[in-house]
Image (cartoon, rainbow, N blue to C red; front, side):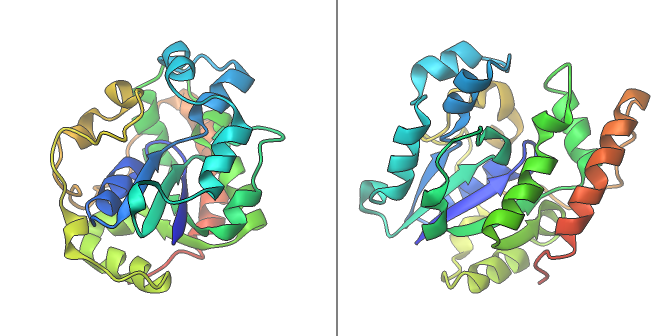
Length: 234
């Protein structure tokens, strides 16, 4: 089985990749279209030059690998993708042969978390329009990171059942320090998950945002709510 897990940044996406890697039967790939996106867009993301130099930056070659054999002789292939990395003209036909899952998170939490890592935050950066459009195009399942944090075992059982993948309790724990499959951007973005060995506890109240981020929240919230209405429940 090939799984394309689509998520904006700061959405629990790395922890979910670690959970599937911990199963033992899943190869994982960390944001394979990140380097092509950076090369095509010229975006000034942290470590952009290093990312382009260290990772495959040709979207056609990345797409071919997505469509190719599962690495390492594993039974399943879990690919962590971000919708806003799929630039204009990037191949997407490979995703038609995947189980497409859309991981979402309340935009107030995304904005607060992203702003702690980068000085500027735009709607393009956090990917809500791109994710909503991709969901309309590809369909698939929706799962909310808030529900996973509240009850990881129940939600992972529900998700695995929905895609006909046997649930394994090993998904709830992983070794600290990261994975060999992490992109080189991990040193900027993955500090908290590298310090973890499992899912963090339930989230608290929504964070207060800086006044300058309120328009961003108003733009993203309807897109989140539309997808949230389709989210899996345990």
